[in-house]
Image (cartoon, rainbow, N blue to C red; front, side, top):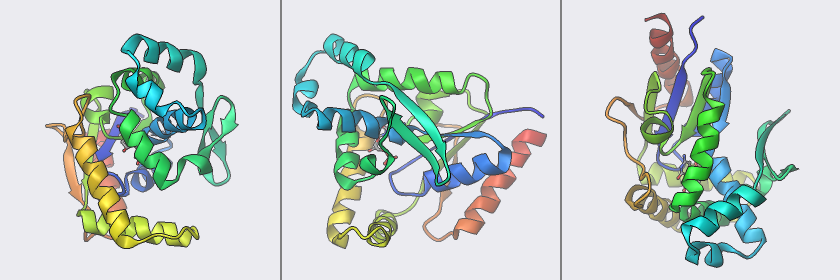
Length: 229
Ligand code: DC
């Protein structure tokens, strides 16, 4: 059967990874969470107290530091895919608000984007991947056969993130989570390097008032149309 690349972009906390994982499972495709890669880079810099120094450095230094110090890989576990930083599973460490924020900051740096985009493009060479992020349909795979752009209101996304944090036993204040969502939206859409934007040929799905089942149904329908069409 013909294999395609599915690019899923959209704002933070709008359920991209959930739908990407579900579709990958349905299709028997590999799922790639590119946000986890930006988060792992942020974690490395944070663990080594290098965020500010890195931001202030020139492009050549940044590119060399990334190449020489950061090896990323994905591990399949019973709980799903985990990202490894230099051979160590750091999945739980990257899923904090703090690392999310730092990831949003370092993802604006050109050297970081080039370093990760090159790896992401390699992962899709053989097709059969569902990749989610901010620039998949515009920069990583501008020729992806199926491009989806997910969106939901900031309030709905903040509520979902807030519920998730409470479920994990993390204390949170809704207003702070909302501010964080809005700040990240602003940074993701206003940065100079590959800002988040909808590819012209992307199909927009606003899931503010959609159940997960309805969304999955719609995405599978779109996927099947591409496979059979
Ligand atoms: O999807 P996420 O919240 O795990 O992503 C973390 C940050 O990484 C997010 O603020 C934007 C950035 N990112 C990016 O710039 N490009 C991508 N392809 C994926 C994530």
